[in-house]
Each structure stands twice: as C-alpha cells, then as structure tokens.
Length: 339
Image (cartoon, rainbow, N blue to C red; front, top):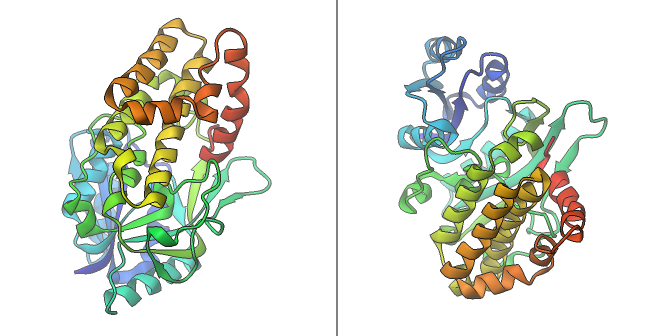
C-alpha cells in the first residue's frame, strides 16, 4: 500500500504533463502517480504516460480510458488508487518539492501514529502568466496550524476564502465511503470533489506550506472568462448538483454548516455573474431558473442566499443590476484566478 496516490488527469497534455509528473517523482516509492489518459487523440499524451510507467514502474501507472472529461479521469484515479491518501494534480500544474516533502512527512506521521487524519489542507500559488507577484492562497485566518482539529475549532473564513481542490488531500477510504463520483463530460467538477466529502470529514490538519502551483494563462483554460461564459450550462449543472447533495440548513455542526452555505453562495454568485456578463437574454433566463430551482428545492436556503449581500447584488433590476455585480465579480475573479 502506498502513502499517497496522485491522480493526474491528462487530455492532450503533451506540452506540459512532463513538468507535472517530474515535480511529483521526488516522492519516491511511497507515492503512486496515476497518469490518466482521458482518451487523448491529438498528441503523444498516451505514449508519454506509458513511457513514465515503463521508466518508473514502482511509482507511475498509466491508465487509458475513453474520453469522459476531467471528472471521469478523477474517478478513474480514485478507482485505481492504492494510497492511504488521495490528491489530484492537473496536468498543467505542479508541486513545490520542499513543501512536498513536508506534506509526505505529515501524512506519514498520521499513518504510523494513533490518530486518523481525514483531510490535509495546504496553500496553493497562482502561477499566473505575466504576473510579477504570485498570489498565495493561505488559510492562516481560518485554520489552526500544525495541529489536528475538527470543524468546531475552525476560525474565520474570509469572504471569497475557500478550500479548493488545489489545497486539499483527502483520506482515500473517506472519498469511497462518501460515494464520491464526479459526473462525466462536465467542467468545474473540482467544486464537487471538495464539497461533497465535507460532512464526512471529522479531523483536519493545516500545513502552512506553498505546495500546489496552479497555472493560469492558457486561452483554452476552463477558468478563462470567455470560456466560462460559453460553458455557463456546465457551471449551473454543477451548482444544482451541489445544492442537492445535502440540506445544509440542517447540518448540526454550525461552523461546517456556515462554511457549506457560503460555498453554495459563491457557486450561485458565479453562475449569476456569468449570465450577467454574457449580456445574453437566454443566459439571464437560465440565471432566473437557477434561483427558482433553489427556491423550490430548499426555501430556507433560498431566503438566506437570495437576501444575502451577494444574492441581492446579482439580482438587482435594470441597468444597476448589471453594474453592481461587477464589484462582486472582481472579488471572485481575484480568488478563482479567472483570466
């Protein structure tokens, strides 16, 4: 059994996947690197995956499947994982070696100790092209450092301050037990990956190191603003799925409940702002339908989100209804790294 399984979803990733894989190799044989070729046809992704499995048979495994999208590639990684812990690293991203060693030391401590760790959180860095200063997302205001804690010990998550796929490592068995299965052929499922397991997490550890390097800058990237507007249906689909996993208003632990409500709030806000930014009547109808969907599904949550600051901001009528959300959009843009 491995200490850590790292799934790398790859789809026509020849240009950058080597950098990603090479950054993970220093973990040695305690780590398995699952290179998931998601039906790549336009380049040598499949051959490169096989090459690494051949050259590093104790570390790398190549998994080939028909194209199912990012979520199905993560599913394939989870199905094949033998590690006690599970991490996803996208093929155009990479990890910092010194922070990586600290991550492995921390996981090792819990595997060989008496206490069980469900979720490890670390920092990530926006590696945005042409940016002189790299933005670091840390959790110092929200999470106790260097100690095992539970949701009741969580401090303050600032507005726009969320745990993303880049910052989280889950215990593999926890992901399986909570029934995590991401939808096929759907973008933005990384939100589901982080969100769905949260009520099953009992123990958390925050390691204040800049581990994950999140590349921002390709024109075809899923977080490119114009791409996101073009895929607004995908964003709304993921938001609806997240709304349906739990009745978050009934979660007993109030800090977990508050965090999950805020996460849903940001998902509703992003979907709404994309519709407004598109200046498209059809998309505005989709926005309206999304809020109606929430109202029918969970009236208490609807009232909480609709009449909160961001809910009011994205539902103003007339021209002011188009202008006011820009301030909210800039906040989400900074956090999520839209380009």
